[in-house]
Image 1 (cartoon, rainbow, N blue to C red):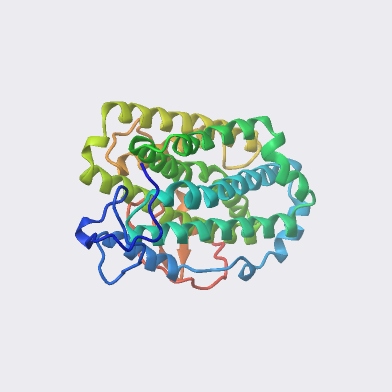
Image 2 (cartoon, rainbow, N blue to C red):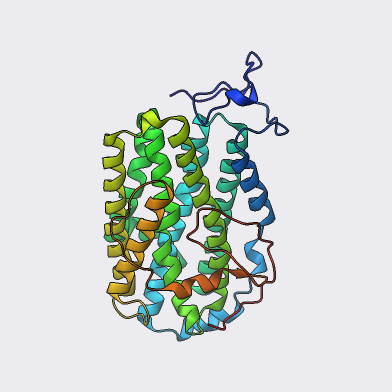
Length: 340
């Protein structure tokens, strides 16, 4: 695969000739003519979802953090450290590693927007860490010093590095699946933990921040699911038995790593998140992500913590975090609805 030219006046590519990768774009964003309408629709949803971390009131969380148990503090800090790493990685991965090979301008738009949102999430975590935690430097170093976290991070980055070192069509498609796993599985045990605290009336500002972050992650998940499903139609030749085996192996490894991580940060000491619930929840997520891109379920389990969906309410509207489409949601009131 070749990186696209950013200035290409010799191109005569028409809108119907556009490709996700391997096209010959002019470099001009001619958005009056769209081939991938789903991408432009998603762009508009992302714009309408715009929010900023400073709008979330974290005042109450400062006192809550002082009063939660040491186990809850440790889990909170570890969850934030992991989320910080993933959004940092994703900000650079999208711009430097994925977008350079994408040759459809309407898809370039949403990848750039996603990268902005990942950077915004990094700022959100910085606000949470610096406002609430008493050991911010330690949290920012955990990705180096915590061996379990580093092992998980190495695995996450590994597939992206395959594309960096060997930019083939096969590795690009694998990177799309890796993005789906990152957005749709790896983030979720950390989110669920913070929601669990809020469900018991603690750290409500943090949960509100995560609600906004997770609403963004829904669009990111849909982005890569649509990329995969579109490529399945346009480039069925890429979906070989070898790819399918590698994808299934990636999902199984993700479930293993995320389950170990979820159990590690909760240590069986967080009410509402037993080891069994953590494992089943991650398995459920994996099955849902697989079926959304045309694969069969592996685990066949139900969602054990359906109450998590309650945190997706904005202006009395509700988005299903596990569906393959996204409706248009306004930012809405920042009043946190803690009636569960």
